[in-house]
Structures are given as structure tokens and as C-alpha cells.
Image 1: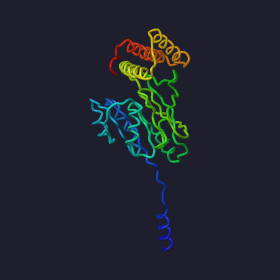
Image 2 (image 1 turned 135 degrees about the vertical axis):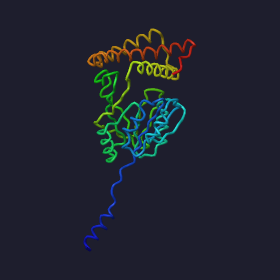
Image 3 (image 1 turned 90 degrees about the vertical axis):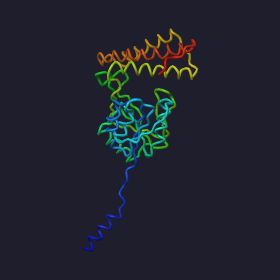
Image 4 (image 1 turned 120 degrees about the vertical axis):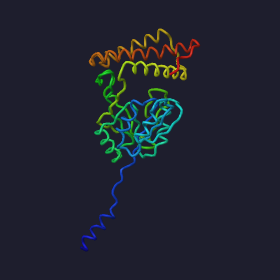
Length: 271
């Protein structure tokens, strides 16, 4: 009995390793269709934080019902908003998740293992993206590695209004399992996002002093189609590959056309 009591005391005195705290942060605006499933996929984290920018649908209510910590703010652009969300979170590790993305169980396990070892300061991962009815394998959409997981204080997003990226101060490791991205479920969502992003990109061109012309807009659109459909093998993704190339071409064309319109004294339509 004495030996048994000693054994118990010995086990109790051994400090078990504590996994670093992980925060998954999500920025939103009118994401009622996505937010519950998005949060559900992130429940393995210690904290799920939503930063909403004035949604007028049920996004905030649904996020709270799903168990997320919800904050609200104005909209300064994608990069700045994601940095705000990082600042609000309290994890030692931060994962930036978009509302139309999901973290499968295999990726969740890999994330936990990565932060447990802490071998790197940040990690990128592949992303499988849906375009209409197909998960794309070409056209520049696969493996589409994106850096999302970072140790606190070791990374921040660029301040770009669109197409922001995580800038890391340290080493970047590579995860194997993909994030799932339900980017475009129907044609209406393709047109809506193309319009919003081209407007924001035109404004960013103006802020950077970049000029545009009608001929340049046409040229950029044609080049973007050729690059997506031929050089990046979108042709191998069937009808969706062709439609994606058209969508990319239109986005590039309208971005430059809206910037040209601004130079002529007319503001672009609101995003």
C-alpha cells in the first residue's frame, strides 16, 4: 500500500503538457448561409471569434447561437479587418478562416499537431475550391496553397483591400490536408463577387496611382482568359474551367474599366 500511495503521489506531481491555445478568427458580412457550418468546422479550437462588419441578415444571431464570440466593427478592407480580428483573439496561435471555408477533421488534427510541436512560426496549406458544381483541379485553383496558421506576433495581413496575404516574420511549414472552400455555388454569386472585387481593386489602383485605358482593359481581360484557360490548364476542368476563365477575364476587364471610368471623373459603382 505504501508503494501504491507513493506511486500515486509521483503521478500527481508530474505536470502534463498543455496544448497551446488556438483561436480561429472569421470576418463576416451577410454570411448567414455559411456561418453556422463554418463555425461548426472550427469547434476543435479553443476560441472561435467572429468579427462582423454590419451584416443586415442573420449572421450575428447565427454566429452567437453556434457558440462563437462575436464582435462588430466597420469595414476597412479585407487585410485590415483580418488584422483587427487577430488583435481581438487571445490564442497563442491564430487561424484565419473565411466564412465560405470549412476545416475537415483531418486538417483539424494536423493543425493541432503542428502547434503542439511549434516547429515553425506559421503554416500554409492547400485549398480545394468549388466553382459552380466542380472542385477545380487546374486553372490556378489547385493546390492554391495559402498561409493561414500563425503564431501570435509572428504575422499580419497586408493592408490590401482585396487579395490580402499573410506576411510572416519567421519560418513557414507546410500542412498536407486541404481546407475546403465553397467559393462560388451559383452564377449569381460569381457575378456578385466579381462586381464587388473589381470595384475594390479599381479603388486600390487609384490609391496606388496606377492608370488605365479602354484598350488596356480589353488586353488585360484577354490575357487573363488565355492564362487561366490555356497556360494554367483550365481547359482540363471541363465546362467549369471555361466559365472560370471567362469570369477571371471579366473581373480583370472590369477592374481596369472601372479605373478608367474614375480617371474620366466618374466614380465606380459602390462595392
